[in-house]
Image 1: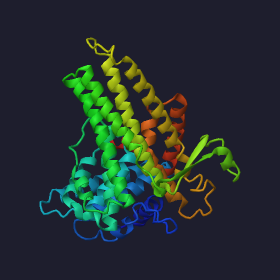
Image 2: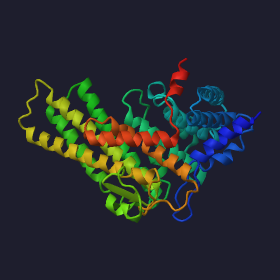
Image 3: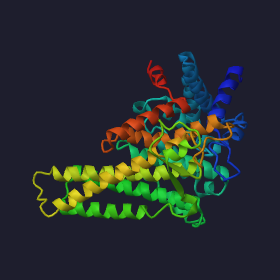
Image 4: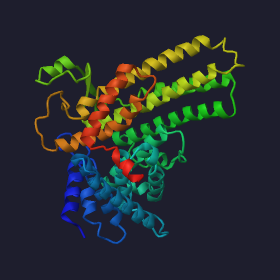
Length: 413
């Protein structure tokens, strides 16, 4: 039975985290198929989605109202969603339909925003990968299936690139599925490039694992590093064409439109929409992770007592300098997308004319920023000022998404 309190929690979540496509630029929506799916959840076996949305809605309300009692309701709904989803997934006759995948997407969003990383790190990444495998290539051909695939596939890859422990097996199927799609499509090219970014980061991490586990000669390590740098140079050739174009503006130009510039970065990157900014930041953050791995590999190489590095010392110094400069440039680029992502400005660098949907697009843009900003604010290779700016951006993300810290404490009681 749905109570008025439930309706309020559901409406709160929908207002904050569902955005319809924009007609003027054909901007993709975010969870725009969720309300329609939600209306169908009274069908047997689909209650998990209702519980997941209630959990996310009550969690947002608990933060908004600073009420831990509502937080306890959110955790109860979360437990119910996990329980019902578990029973569904245990069914050998399971049809991994859109409701199942959407449930996992919403639960992942709930955990990302409301539970601490230490307790939920990547808990649904494996589930997403498993469901994507079961659904097969057919999920890519409809708009709802593609939207769900894109969200869950990206989340899985982010988990893979971020965490060293508990990584799941590779998911090669999407690369095969893409062969059946129009290779000229910008969305297909973007997904293939994202897969390549992930692959290169995994190769760098594998090199680090091999150095630690079996030991490699300096010659072998340097050859691997050269190959990875070639892959990274190839990645710089991606994201070309009018669909990926962006504009760089100094904050003094933004001030002409009456905006206060004290909290703006010196330069602002303006993309066609926040989805394009998100795709660029995925690309930038993947490269940041790659070069961080390369620097660690070089550090391990130089710490090898028995290694004779005389033949490589100049090359090592050059690579270290280049990677550090690149990391800081990429960090600046990500931070320069914050004003548009949180809707301080629109894609023209002006204050948004219409406040309709502002709450949703601020929350969604902030959610898109969460992964790169969390990487940057604890990145040793970033400057102190960059880490400070990332922490400030993180506080705004907390505000606009309704992130909470105390639900993790309640869940341990």
